[in-house]
Image (cartoon, rainbow, N blue to C red; front, top):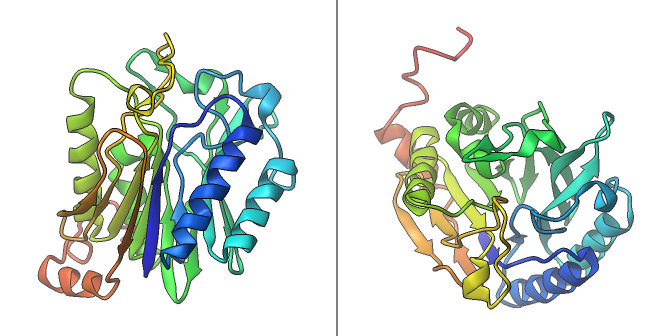
Length: 268
């Protein structure tokens, strides 16, 4: 399966961000991708007041994402914000196109490193996967990468590829943690992992906000099921298009049977 990782820097205006998504989706399709993955907060960057921007999954923003997917002829995965019943918003991934229609609400909220996502964002609770071209794919978001059980749940559901849109927070050691965690999650679930972050605003020529909000560091990567980085971007915006050899998952699982050998957390 040919996939595209679109590392962009989004701003506070959802309409302007849609124009970026369209341009990147068309580029990905021209390079033969079946799916293009955008970062978390593709709708509007963190540091923006999210409540007034949140829309339901049948609202104008998501409807335009569906139009982009249809026009480009691929699946688009993009982070947006939907209204939550308690007045907060939900940090949602929309996956749409080529007959796919799925939405994942971020389960693990970023209440760490001086930021409290849960003040404005309500958590999700459901593991979500979808199928494209006979390949089962799991969805996760940013801080979820610190919780291996979610990626193992993807594998238990039949996934061989997990998608991880993110808007990673900057700071001492944070790039090292991002690279370590993405490789670890691929390895301990023996899945391909496409980790797609917001580009570093400074490397994008954008204004760097004076806030603790996680606005991205870049370094999106495609990691194999053996934990090795196969392709990677740097801090600046970029479009990475690569082929995922899904059959490699079965070979790795025969060699390193960590899923079959589990003793804890299997429900047995």
